[in-house]
Length: 419
Image 1 (cartoon, rainbow, N blue to C red):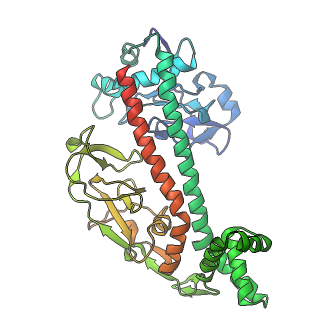
Image 2 (cartoon, one colour; image 1 turned 90 degrees about the horizontal axis):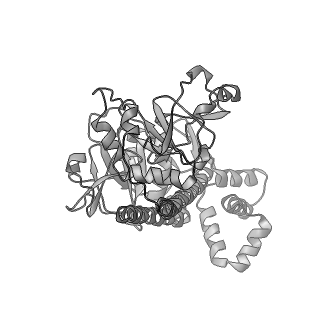
């Protein structure tokens, strides 16, 4: 590597200099998969950034962690982090020719060389492994003349994966916004209450609720009744399902006939069968094994799956120790402290969004996570099913994109190994 790359160690930034805006800092804790998460980025002032220009990052830079439990992890800097600064306990690798495709190729060459395992074999220390810079510089990779062609083909697949991921994030955000409107802000209910308090009719209150649900004006709804009568009838049915009054239940204001329940009262636990671990997982196999983090799959096995799931019949999975929750649409098994459940007299998509964000780990004496004792506001089953109809298509697209991403990743890996 020392023949083809230049390196730069990360700088030390003081926590008292962190702020909400400015120039972003990439820390080891921001690493996620092959890239970084932009969700919890810290920032510093432009003045401090100007004094640390040497650690400024460019898109596609390769960054390696050098100290601690994550030593040897490496990621590729995304375009969104252009100009960010590199924090301590890391080293940046950049090709001397400073060519985009050489840089992109470098990442793939390291990834498929099992570079992390190579570095850890020579790491110093056991409690806190430390990567020596010479280990990195003396490592060898294939560097063929057609490396840029290889990089372009592999990167095109990663771009499609990235696009699918962005689409999925947008689709889920749309579903979350609708959930908030219906079940947090109670906009259809409040629209009805306002109209009735103004002395208008129940029919006009229903129309106001339809407007709140659809975001359409009265004139647009009239036009919809002519052009798409089925869609109009569906809106009317949904609006009718919302009550016209708010009441207090256990000190909480909720729509009339809605209830406040513990989460464990509205879920149905799904047994996950045999528990697996990294020691019993294979790199290839028929059934994926879910871990506790964002990466999702820790490996595979060839036994019967612990849980059956599909696009039409997904399952909610919760990881107790990382508090990570996701919807799964394929057969799977799991490691310890990963749980699965469905809704009991409520729609699965409603349940997923109703419990999302309420995860919190507290050591549990039984066999199920503590966050399930938290309370949520539960509408009648009919309304959760109507909500499910509205968001089902979005989640089905998310599942399809996830499967495409998985297939693209496998094809990308096979392509590199066959060059």
